[in-house]
Image 1: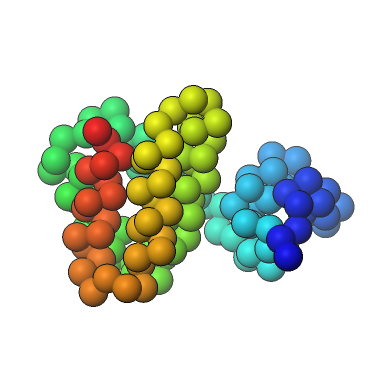
Image 2 (image 1 turned 180 degrees about the horizontal axis):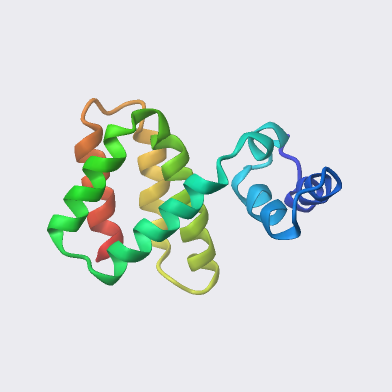
Length: 130
């Protein structure tokens, strides 16, 4: 069963990580201590920056370019989608659109079922910039 975020956060702080990084890793861990320890925080920050730029300038060419970039890094697609899920979960808690968070969850579920990951990511990103 999943470990509570607070417990993961406390464990990471005891291991010497900063409070801020421990909190981020706990959020991204989905209740897994192993995931919290292995998570690439730099990737999360990059995703946060890239999606921030996209949301400020949601031009279709930017959507397509970012989708293509992310799909080229196939092994990172799941962590990218998980990062988006965490970012949108935070937005949902602030009263933002839950349908966008649900679209990210569907993309995560569909990641291993769809042959055309480019189309999956394009569709998701277009739904996020609406």
